[in-house]
Length: 278
Ligand SMILES: NC(=O)C1=CN([C@@H]2O[C@H](COP(=O)(O)OP(=O)(O)OC[C@H]3O[C@@H](n4cnc5c(N)ncnc54)[C@H](OP(=O)(O)O)[C@@H]3O)[C@@H](O)[C@H]2O)C=CC1
Ligand SMILES: O=C(O)[C@@H]1CCC=N1
Image (spheres, rainbow, N blue to C red):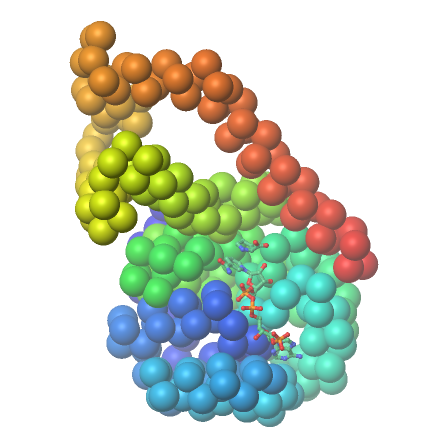
C-alpha cells in the first residue's frame, strides 16, 4: 500500500461529473489541490452548477472543451458510454498525448487505448466513494505506455486515500468487486442492522446512532490494530454469550458463502461490462 502525495502539476480534466467524480474532486480540493487546476465535462447542468458552487472548479458541457490543455484526463463516465466518449477525444489524444486515467468498471486498458486512437498512456484506477473524506482506497493498473507516468496517477489518487498497485490487469475486476463496490455492502449491512434494531424495539434514531458508531468503531479497530479481523471478532464473542448467538445464526444461514457469491457476481459483472461494450 502506498501513500504518495505527489500531485500532477498541470490541469486535470474530469470527463464525467457524477457521483464518483464528485467524491474525487471533493477529496482533492479538501486536500489542497487547487480548484483552478480541475476542469470537468458534465452534460447535466444541475451537476455542473453544484460542482462549481461546492468546489470552485471550471465546468464544461462537453468533453473536448474540458480536456483541452489538460495533461491528465480522468475518465469518469459509465462503462456503457466510455467508447463514444473516447472516440470523441481521440483526435485530441493524438495531439495532446495525455495520461488517461479511467475509473470505469470492467473497461480494459486495451479497449481504452484502441478507442483513444492507440499508443496512449492508460492507467485503470478503481477508487471508492469514501475518497470524498480522504478515506478512499484505489487499485491502480498501468499499461506499458503509462509505466513512466504511473507515479503521476498514483499521486493524484493518493490524495484521497492509499493506493494499491495491481500488476495483473485481470485482477482489477476483483478490486472493483471488493473495494470499488465495497462501501455499498457496508451501507447495506447498516440498513439491515438498523431495521433489525427497530424490530427489537429501538427508536429509528437510536438504532441509527448505535449502528453508525459501531461500524465506525469497528472499522477504526480494523485499520489501527495489528490483529486480523478474526481475532478482533473473537474478543467480542464471549462463550455462550449474545455475540455467539448471532454469529452462529449468520454461519447457519450461509453468510460466508453468500458474501463469496456476491463478490464473484460483482467480479463477473466487471468482465461482462468489458465484453458488452466492445
Ligand atoms: N459510484 C462509485 O462508487 C464508483 C464508480 N466507479 C466508476 O465511475 C464511473 C462513473 O460512475 P458514477 O460516478 O457512479 O456514475 P454517474 O452516472 O453518477 O456519473 C457519470 C456522469 O457522466 C456523465 N456523462 C455521460 N456522458 C458524458 C460525456 N459524453 N461527457 C461527459 N460526461 C458524461 C453522466 O451524465 P448522464 O447522467 O446525463 O449520462 C453522469 O453525470 C463508472 O464508470 C463507474 O464504473 C468506480 C468506482 C466507484
Ligand atoms: O457499481 C458499479 O458498477 C460501480 C463500480 C464500483 C462501484 N460502483
